[in-house]
Image (tube, rainbow, N blue to C red; front, side):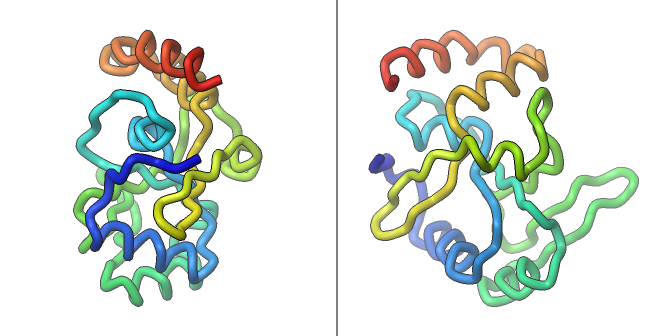
Length: 149
């Protein structure tokens, strides 16, 4: 599936480095939904990593000029130098990264094949989270799923 181009050149290059270096990750949240054709807007791109902070991830981030800031008691993990990207540590209502990776969709952006969480699983997570903003977008996600399937 070819995706709308939601990324700048710098963002595409960052994602390409992650892929080229073999970092296991997927795009999740509304960015993943938008990449699958959902008419949704988001302010960030959520990345879920299989192994946060491992040597492969750190090496890829360094190559991209990005630093990983591990979580602390009061702050989530951060990617310094990759402003639009957020690190997700848990997806409500879903299984482990490994279990959910079985549900990824591959979205082509140029020559890049980007793993994104499937729309069905995004819906399941938003239903489980039950935040007002997640509940508000559910009808749009469900409508899009009917059209896309």
